[in-house]
Amino acid sequence: MTRNTAAPATAAAPATGAPHDRHIERACRFIDGFDERAPTLREIADHVGLSPAYFQKRFTRALGVSPKQYADQRRRERLKSLLREGDAVTGALYEAGYGSSSRLYESSDATLGMTPATYRKGGAGARIAWTAAPCALGLLLVAATERGICFVALDDSEDALLAELEAEFPQAEIVPDIGILESWTAEVLRRIGGAPARDSLPLDVRATAFQQRVWRALTDIPQGETRTYSEIARALGKPSAQRAVGRACATNPVSIVIPCHRAKRSDGSLAGYRWGIGRKEALIEAEKAATE
Image 1: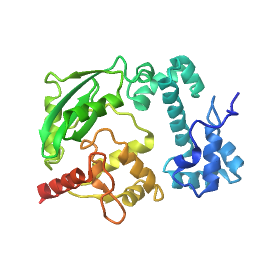
Image 2: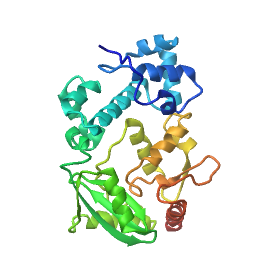
Image 3: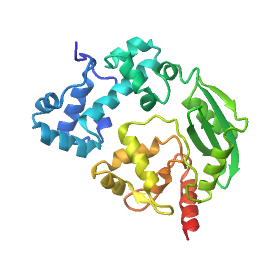
Image 4: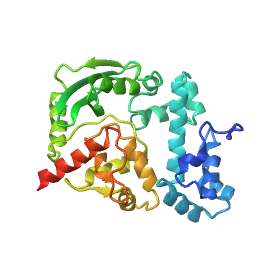
C-alpha cells in the first residue's frame, strides 16, 4: 500500500502558506496521502496537471521548500504525532513512511533533537539542566542537554519559565544546573545587553530544513540591524515565503542565541514576540546602542 485512503491528520491548506493557489493545495493533499513512500515529482505534477519543472518552481516559490522537503517535513510530523500518541517506535517509523530504522536513526538528531524513543516519551530519559539569571529584561532561563542548549526563555517569574520548559519536555528529567551552564548563560546575558556574539554556543534543537535556513539568515543579520520577513524571504531566494519566515521565527526555541527579535513586519512595525513586544524592542535598541 502506498496511499492513505483516510483524510490526512492535518489539513493541507493551512500548512501551505498559499491558501489561494489550488494547485499547491491539491499537491499538498496528494503528498499527505502517501504513507509508505513519498511520491515522485512527476507523480505530483501529473496529479495537478502541470509540468514537473514548472510545478517545482511554483511550489517552491509558494512555500519556501521543495516538494521533497515538504514531503520529508510532513513525514517527520507524522512520526512525532505517532510517537506522542504512544505508538511503538518500530511501528511508528514504518507508518510514518521510513523504510528502515537505520534511516530514521541516522537522521534523528536533525529530525527530533533526540532519539525517537526519547521524543516519543516527551523527553523521557533525557536529562535537561536549567538555570535562571536576572537580566535587564526580567529573568533569563537557559536549559541544555548534554549536546547543547535546547531552550532559552524570558519572563518575570521563575515558575512561569519552568512551566514553559516542562511543557516542551514534559517527561524529561529536568534538574537545576550545578555550574555547567555558567559560561553559556554569561554569553547569552552579554547578547541581551547588546554585545555581539563572542563565543559560539552549541545547540540541541529540532528544525526543518527551511527553519534552519531562516535561523541562519537571522544570525547573519549584522549587529544592530533588522530585516523584514519579506527581505529575509528574498535573501533565501523565496520571495513569496514571508509567512513561512514568520512561522520559523515564532517557533525558534532558543531566543537571543538565534536572534529572531531582528525580524519585523514589512511596514517596519514589530511583529509578535513570544516574550513580549517590549522585550523585543529593548533587544533591538540594546544592539543599536552597542554598535553606536
